[in-house]
Structures are given as structure tokens and as C-alpha cells.
Image (cartoon, rainbow, N blue to C red; front, side, top):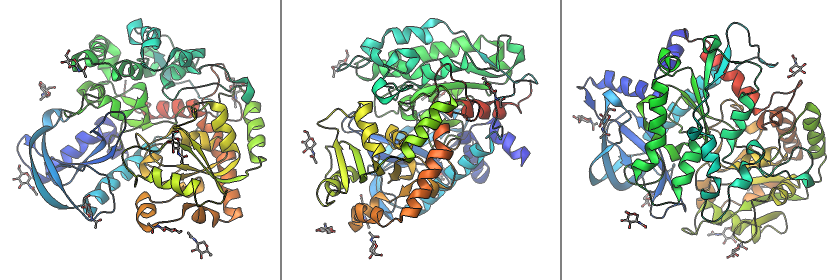
Length: 523
Ligand SMILES: *[C@@H]1O[C@H](CO)[C@@H](O)[C@H](O)[C@H]1NC(C)=O
Ligand SMILES: *[C@@H]1O[C@H](CO)[C@@H](O)[C@H](O)[C@H]1NC(C)=O
Ligand SMILES: *[C@@H]1O[C@H](CO)[C@@H](O)[C@H](O)[C@H]1NC(C)=O
Ligand SMILES: *[C@@H]1O[C@H](CO)[C@@H](O)[C@H](O)[C@H]1NC(C)=O
Ligand SMILES: *[C@@H]1O[C@H](CO)[C@@H](O)[C@H](O)[C@H]1NC(C)=O
Ligand SMILES: *[C@@H]1O[C@H](CO)[C@@H](O)[C@H](O)[C@H]1NC(C)=O
Ligand SMILES: *[C@@H]1O[C@H](CO)[C@@H](O)[C@H](O)[C@H]1NC(C)=O
Ligand SMILES: CC(=O)N[C@H]1CO[C@H](CO)[C@@H](O)[C@@H]1O
């Protein structure tokens, strides 16, 4: 067991799988692998798809233009890709397109099995340490002092990130954004892409921080890679421009003895966006190739949405608006929401997707606004400003269940907003949370959420309101108590000067697990 875990730790899962396939098929150095691309359409760029790719056990690979997990067969054009075992991370080469019918269930079952095995491995890295981190035995954290072009200068470009709004209002208060005193102490208008700043400012004050790299076990690289990619999303620049800062960082790291010592395996990056933004494919100009670079395979990457088939991608909670400073801030909030009068059975805050009437979102919006007899409250994000913390929190604190269908990508910040409001999230896709947050959410998802398969809802005309109304008060109460008392403290990112005694917040859990994860590497 120890052998196989440390072996897995040493090489990325992708390489590991390629290696297994290599063993089985004993081909020459170039082998073909089968890849499942799980795709959903996105409004960010038209005629293109958000896809998650998995290695599987046979060797054609295909692109499915519509993600439908229960469809027994797919008839679609297949793009055969070929990957080189020697540098498994090269972009796939498209060899041609041809129609084929492939048994699908088997491939999906295999892909899901890989995810579940990886989550098990990630859960095995969790630290049992429920108290403050113990920093003895040379378990220090070293934070690189990077040249400012890799972090602070990117903050300086905050007014150029989005064409339609000024991102600078979100970079204030070390990434928390503007305070929202109407909601109470510790509430801010925090943007979902702000984790790079939040982690950086906390790690600088971590009790295990060391200033001599020889005392360190864990190396924190404060590169704001998410902001780096964000500034190019809405500009017409070449791929070379987008990739240049990441490549500069690789050059910088390769000059560090500490980087070379363990081939980067004891290094961690926080990337405050979704994995897809760093894994540009050949058929879309979106994002950078940062996480496809060989040099980035060994380190651990903390992301708000992980690539479900990459072991070293660790999903961490999206930041919410709440950043408590003390145990009492958390306890006060817990009392408030456990007593809250939840006058809506169900609520949904979101916008429809233009492309399809049979999109799960459109179905839910229809059900919520038409046949719910006042049981469901819909906050129409196409017409009102849903990004305002007050309107979201007020709605969720007064609701029993919060619908969380996937949007532009499978995960949603809203899942965490609803959990910290004591509103039970209703999920329609396992990629939204279950395949993501091995360190912060338990394996048993029934403890904190309701799952309704989106395909079933769509095809069987399931009445979501009726299903949820059928859940007994006792079951709701149990879920809510678990969410509020067991999960909530570990889902919030505390204040930069937080001092918790009774609780561990999302940051503390993450750092303890990282220290445990790297402590087995030799010096
Ligand atoms: C896998 O690829 C090899 C080499 O390209 C080929 O000979 C073999 O027929 C393929 N197997 C399947 C099941 O497609
Ligand atoms: C499976 O998916 C294909 C392509 O999306 C579709 O044409 C076909 O009707 C589906 N079959 C079933 C049984 O749902
Ligand atoms: C983007 O820039 C390229 C090269 O300068 C140009 O050819 C292309 O038309 C531009 N595309 C858009 C959408 O502006
Ligand atoms: C939501 O708002 C948009 C834009 O104002 C509108 O077109 C749409 O009909 C609204 N949806 C519902 C269900 O009210
Ligand atoms: C779905 O069910 C509702 C009643 O629950 C019914 O009014 C509606 O016509 C059904 N829709 C379809 C497409 O069967
Ligand atoms: C809700 O419960 C009633 C009574 O037990 C049952 O008839 C109905 O089918 C249930 N509805 C759903 C959608 O599960
Ligand atoms: C944890 O650390 C805080 C200060 O950071 C301290 O006040 C508290 O007593 C510590 N708790 C434990 C259990 O050591
Ligand atoms: C097509 C492609 O990207 N090829 C690259 C694969 O990776 C090797 C080594 O990293 C490069 O030398 C190739 O150019």
C-alpha cells in the first residue's frame, strides 16, 4: 500500500495510466490512448465546448459534442488522437474524423472508476491533525519571493481584466473585495477568482512559514496564474503571448536548487480559476497551456475546479463572501442560520443558457417559475444583479433547498454560497462537487446534498419541487445540521489575521493536508 501510494505520488496519474496501458499493450514508444471528453456547451465562446478529458483503456479517442452520460451508444464524429508516451502531455494530434458507434457505458464506467480511485488517493492524503499545524521536524513552509511580474504586477492590471467591469474592486483587501457591513462583520464582495491573493496573504502569516529553504518541506509558489490568463480572455492576442509568463516562470524555477531537488513534487501552486483555463486545446484559443507543460505535472495545483483525471489537481472550495476572524464569528453565524425562517422550499439563482430549451437550467427555471405554487423562488440573473452578496445570501438563508445545475463549467461558486447559508444544495451532475473536493467534502454526499440526475429530470419529466417536497423534515434537519456544524467552518476562508482555536477553516485544512502530503518525500 505504502509502495503503491508513494509510487502514485511520484508520477502524475496520467503518466501512470499511460504506463499501465503501455504495459498491457506492449507497443513501441508511441502508443495511442483512448480519451473521453466530457463536454458541455459554454456561452463564453460560441461554437465551442468545455470538455474534460480522461484516459481510458482502449485506444481510439473521441470527442462527444454533447455530454449525455446514460446514452448507450453515441453516433458522432470521432477525432482520433495520438499521444507520445515520452512526453505524455503534448497536445493531441488530430488524425482524422470518421463516424463510428462506440459502446459508451463501458467507457464512462471506466472513466468514473478512475476518478473514484483518485479521490480515494487524495482522501488518503488528508491530515488527521485537527489542531493547529505542528511545525516541528523541519516541516516548514517556504514561500518564494517571486519577481513582481508573476504576481503583484498582475494585480496592477486589474482595470484591464474585463471589458465590461473594473476588476480592481475585487482585488482590494488582499483579495476579499469591498466590505459589506450590511451582512455583518467579516462579509465582503469577494470574487470567485480571488483565491491566489487570499492564499498568498494567509501563507505569508502561516505559523509554519520558514525563511531558510533548508528548513522547508513544502514550497509555495505565489504565481497568480489565474489573473495571468484572465487578462487575455477577452483580447485578441496570439497563443505565444498568452503562454509567455508561464514559460518565464518555468525558467525562473529551473534556476532554483529547491525546485530541482524533488523535481517540483514538494511544490504547490494556487490557481484561482478552473483547470480548463490552463489546458488549452488545439481547437480553441481559450486559455493557456500552463498545466500541459511537463514541468507542471509533478507539483500540486489547488484549483476551484480540478481536471477530474489528474491526481495532482486538488479541488478547493470556491471563496464565499464570508471571512470570519474568530471562532465566535463562526458560531454567531451558525446560530443565525440554524434558526432562520426558511420560507421558500426551493430557490434558484441563475440565468438560462441561450442555446437550448432542453438545457437543465431552462427546465428548472420553467418548473420553478410556473408550476411551483409559490414553493420555488427564482432570482433571474439575466435581469437582476445576482453578483451582489446581499441578494444571494438573503435568498439562500430563507430557502431549504438551492438548485445548483452546472453552468459554463460543472462547478459553481453558488454551491458554497448555499452551503454556508444552510441551504441544502441540489446537484444535477456529479462533476459539480462529488468529483472535486476530496479534502473539504465527505465521500458520503447524501449527508449534505440531494442528487437528481439531469438526464432523468430532462427525460422523465421529474417534478423537482415534488421530489424535494417529499424529503422528510427530519432528513432535511439532519442534513442542515451536518452542513452548518460539521462542514461550514471548513468551507470558509478566514480573515487574513484570523485566529481560530476550535475550528479549522478551508485554508488551514488545505495547508495541513499539503504538509502531510509532502512530508513523505525525502530531502
Ligand atoms: C490500438 O492501436 C494499435 C496501434 O495503433 C492498433 O494496432 C490496434 O488495433 C488498436 N486497438 C483498438 C482496439 O483499436
Ligand atoms: C444517443 O445520442 C445520440 C446523439 O446525441 C442521439 O441521436 C440518440 O437518439 C441517443 N439515443 C438514445 C437512446 O438516447
Ligand atoms: C485578431 O488578430 C488577428 C491578427 O492581428 C486578425 O487577423 C484577426 O482578424 C483578429 N480577430 C478579431 C476577431 O479581431
Ligand atoms: C429573465 O430575464 C430575462 C431578461 O430580462 C427575460 O428575457 C426572461 O424572460 C426572464 N425569465 C423569467 C423566467 O422570468
Ligand atoms: C410534465 O409534467 C407536467 C405535470 O407534472 C405536465 O403538465 C407536462 O405536460 C409534462 N410535460 C411533458 C413534456 O410531458
Ligand atoms: C412524493 O410522494 C408521494 C406520496 O408518497 C408519491 O406518490 C409521489 O410519487 C412522490 N413524488 C415524487 C416525485 O417522488
Ligand atoms: C491555535 O493557535 C492560536 C493562535 O494562532 C492560539 O490562540 C490557540 O490557542 C491555538 N490552539 C491550539 C489548540 O493549540
Ligand atoms: C507537437 C508538440 O507539441 N510537440 C512537442 C512535444 O513535446 C516535446 C518535448 O516537450 C517537444 O519537443 C515537441 O515539440
